Amino acid sequence: MGSPAIRAKGRRSDQDAVALTRSLLGFDTVNPPGRERDCARHLGAMLEGWGFGVAYHEFAEGRTSVIARAGGADSRPPLCLTGHIDTVPLGARAWSRDPFAGETDGDRLYGRGSSDMKAGVAAILLAARKLAKKLPGTPGVVIVLTAAEEGGCIGSEHLARTRLLGSAGAMIVGEPTSNYPYLGHKGSLKFYARFRGVSAHGSMPELGVNAIYKAVRAVSRLESFDFGEPAHPVMGRPTMNVGTFEGGNTVNSVPDAASFGVDIRTVPGMDHAALRAKLQATLGKEAELEVFSDMNAVWTGPQEDWVQRVFEIAGRTLGVKPEPRAQTYNTDAGNLLKVYKGAPTVVLGPGEPQQAHQTDEYCSMERIRQSVEIYEGLIRDWCGI
Image (cartoon, rainbow, N blue to C red; front, side, top):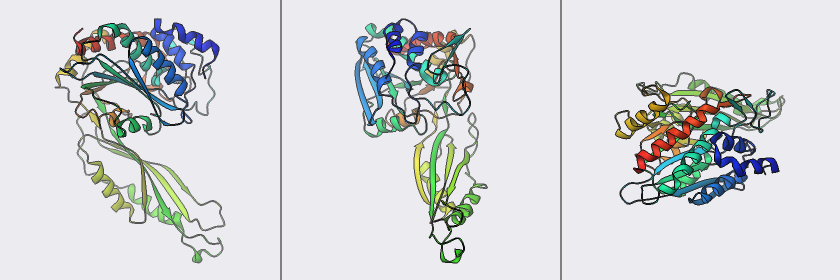
């Protein structure tokens, strides 16, 4: 629950995107455990006050996502603007600033989630507030604010799987890009490979079956794994990283269980089902694969008319002509596009990409204000207002 000071700040936060960002930083939404509900309700209440229809959806207790809609017309589906409410943990290193107070120094606004991505959420809301009264009778907008993006995009997976998203004709993801429009990002296939053995006393290993040996033999085969895919002209090649390895519980017992975790980033055009089958064949029949993230790469070609409009509108504020780029990180777009099929998508937000997940994370306050201007321009352009 936000403190009285935070709640007081929230009452005046709709006057300025920086003030709203500061109020959102005051909600501890560190994931795990998440606890997005209070922040989600705070955001939803503001949107309702501006005339949006608001719905809350929880995939687990306190893990709340928000979908807000305004406008709507038969001629064209709405524009989707999306961001996530949760943040990553503070990390082991000590912060020199209070991560939840929204302290400032020059142009920098400090706090966990300032860049990734409460500034983006605040900018989306402020742009929507400015235009809310003009949206009726236009294609309108749908704002999707998700829980549990960090660590697997679980909130957006729930929204996509349960068909709660409605429709959208194009999508803006407010993740940190320093307000530069990116045309997509690599896909994500993350899994645990689990192996079973038979326990025995460490002095009599011949009576057991060592699960760690099975896992080691399997994981070693991944080091030379060949995706067999050409490089994407912007994203490059797919990548694989073995990030965890676990097994056994005491040194004098034969381990009857072992596992390792794998993070694969795919490029456009890759068939994830075929990739999973190839991985299973490589790891062997004894490997039990537990997939916990499966999202295709996101890519919109620069030749798309809407992308050119985004480049033009964002370029006015940036003072440069954007060129096709892709981000290295993953976003909720991979899940949302399972419903918003074919919707051109850009990743564009005020945060600094290099600040994501860092100690003493900060965001430029000027970029927050600029992003409101860019989002407002994109909404006006889509809705014809």
